[in-house]
Amino acid sequence: MKKYLVTGSYGQIGVALIPAMIKKYGRENVIATGRKKPIPLFKELDVIYRRLDVRDQFGLRSLIVENDIDIIIHNASVLSATGEKNPQLAHSINFEGFYNVLEASRELKIEQLFTPSSIAAFGPTTPLVNTPNTTIMEPTSIYGISKVYIELMGNYYNLKYGLNFRALRYPGVLSPEEPGGGTTDYAIWIFYEALKNMKYTCFLGADVRLPMMMMSDCLKSTFDLIEADDAKLKHRSYNVTGMSFTPEELANAIRKYLPDFTIDYEPDFRNAIALSWPQSLDDSAAREEWGWEPELPFDKMVPAMLDGVSQRLGISYK
Ligand code: SER
Image (cartoon, rainbow, N blue to C red; front, side):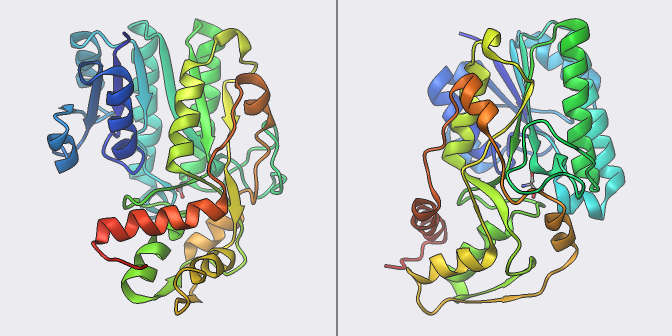
């Protein structure tokens, strides 16, 4: 069994990924790390958790050596909205942090480095409808620029040093867990506010279409790519998507379950970020090369989110 180290493990994806990894690979083979104290869920699951700031290259290397790590899943990142509020922090965590992980992976001969990229790696000059896997990438957010850096550097280390680098361009990821600092987060907060207050004020405009996927599909794509046979991969970074919708369409779908739900719109700086991102993604490269296929469509996502968020809030809506 391989040994895995996960950075940024208490983020929105980490809190779903770590339990799924423990189930799949065994508790003793998964080392969760992060800058803060372990979250209650990790204590409950007796997760092996170590404190790590990815900017600390010595701490990172010690953990890799002491735990004899084979595969790194590097999730630590400042997301798009937080990045625009603090580009310097985003630079140090997203660029320097990734460089430390990349160099440690090379020097310590890590078997595979997986890291999320994002729809944010695209920008206003990209064809934004059905965005191809290979296309113009001139993002305008610091977060998006860091994702292009990650993709290009990962590819470079693959070509130059044979590092087994793999990345997925996640769209907005939907789960009942509270997200942190992203632009696609509206599509989660809408469920919280609908269930608590029957009303949501959206920070994106009504018609801003973005690609999204349910957490179960995010985890599936991650495991599928990590486990894919290297000989099949013609790319290092792949588009993946599950669905695409606007705030208005999502509000209408929620109204089928909560007829009194209302939404209004007060677009802020995040609207401009969203408008520079793809409306939908062409994920055919992932489908063809390693058999990617999403499982959860829009009409099943809505009741799944209502169930998940209502459970977290202890509210019954049926
Ligand atoms: N969900 C991310 C964000 O909104 C995009 O990768 O920042």
